[in-house]
Amino acid sequence: MSENENEITVNNYLKYLSEGKLMGSKCKNCGHIDVPARKMCSKCLKPETEWIEMSGKGKLAAFSSIHVGTPYFEKKGYNRKKPYVFSIIELDEGPMVSAQLVGVDELHPELIKVGTPVKVKFLNIKVEGLPEKVDLRFEPV
Image 1: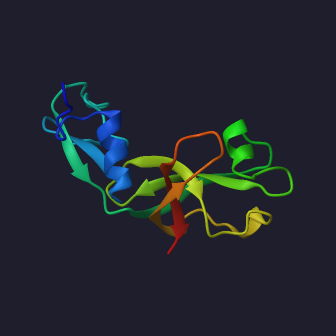
Image 2: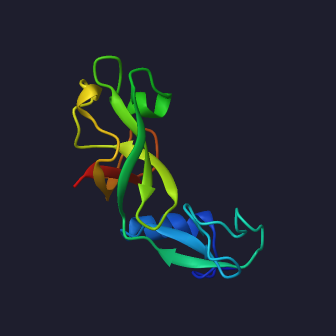
Image 3: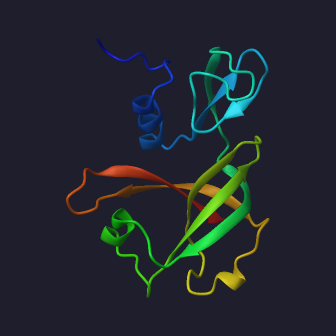
């Protein structure tokens, strides 16, 4: 059985990312937006959601400079001498999403400011031993 592109699934979410679209779900009952998309609204718990495209713009709500990461990030070249910044972004539409923050000085996190305007950035990533995929990132505007 083939997957309906209107159905809210992980595969469809990843397909949209590969097309350069940040998608969420909007509840037909209460209007709440979730990112990533969900089949059931996280606010009213009704299974009446539909896809909605996000603008990809927002502001930095929180962040942390990670010096010892997961094996996945180690394979991508991050380590104690080359940290990465993990962030929480408040999208202009309201939901918060977590992603790596790029385009900042990872070695000097004191220069990174909460409230900085950011925009989405899609990167095609190839890590040795793993399938190629699109990673969701944000960068300062």
